[in-house]
Length: 269
Length: 258
Image (cartoon, rainbow over all chains, first blue to last red; front, side, top):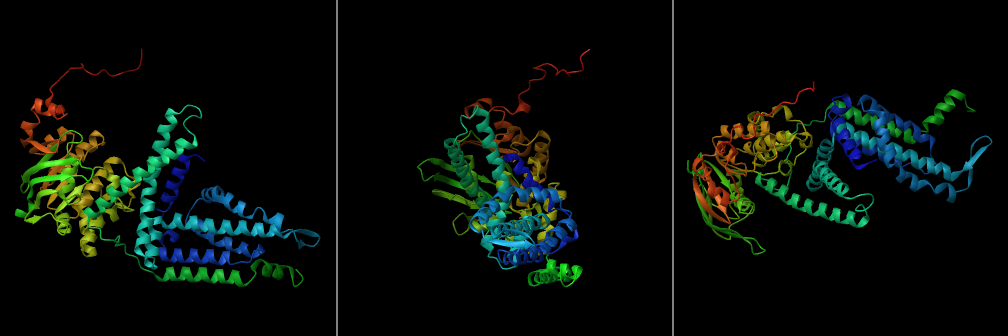
């Protein structure tokens, strides 16, 4: 994906968070808490567990469906970062070659199972994180984290990262265009030029940071970014967190697919 | 009202690299005055503006806002009285939404939440940007960003409003909107700009700065029609004073070919 395309995609993630659905209206703290618990539970499964992970897909699917987030868009974003997970797990089938029977008469190497487990954990956690941003907005998450006790300094850093990511990307885009316009064929696009371009961007960023800081001082900044958003943790937020926790605990402690199989297929299934 | 007075007394400023950017600047701006500051690139305009709310402190000489002398320890007080709108609105709008950004100053002044909401509402109404309150700054157009940057400063209700190129890179309609907006303010106003027509429309008085010194101070109508003074400062007559009707002939509309 080209630079300009990925830029407009981040803008889209941002726009999705303006929605007004039941999921969007939940308190950011509730969503942040639920998502962190979700990720922690998913990651806590041992490396050969695959089937017990499947019921966890209900969480991102429900959030996405009720939050009216296009599934294809999230799928594309997840696919874009999936090479990391693939590289982490790709050698498991080679190194871990003990065989395991998965069905009567079918045996595969245990490495494939742990590879599948890594991929599933990755899919679950990344899609949940993306959905959190798409339904809460980045500033909302920051406010939630601050209310949950994260130090003010970290929260301001995150807020500025979000605010100036777009400005910086636009600046990088302009510099890249200016370079492409005057480099014919492959000349001028090499690593050496790239390093200098990065240097230029860095210097501009430092200057900009100073101007921003001046503007903040001019308006009375004394170390903490204030907020007056009315945020109240309502019963339905508590209910959401409780329901999510209950479901995660159930899926963690009981092997749901196996239980269903036993129910349907009788004691021998 | 004496606190609306801004006075520079023989202010000199030398950057740490040795460049002397201000070489003894003196002037006095009284309550309700609107003053333009013009001059070539590098003449010292920005350095002058950065002194007005204490981002830079004079190497020698004094700056007074009302009776308060500008010192390191009086800076917070001075910044409450003098609101500066910087040139690039992206540097000025640093909060995630327009509402949060305009509320930033009043919240830092320690106002209660209800008063903050009132101030934000009033400031956005004055710049005609109430509908933008929930938008993030990076989704605004250039003209909207300028308007919001001005709202963010007037929400703090400063006594003196200082602006650096308030209409640079705006389309003609947005520029005109900014000019009408500035004309509704009864604050003391100081506007630095290369847009001499804007100065002519907004400011009754004009200072010309050259090489760190004030070389002219008087009525805008007079100074901005003094062609030799302007040319000497790498400026030119404002377009409205150039008087060249029909120089290029009437523009022809391009219609469909027969």
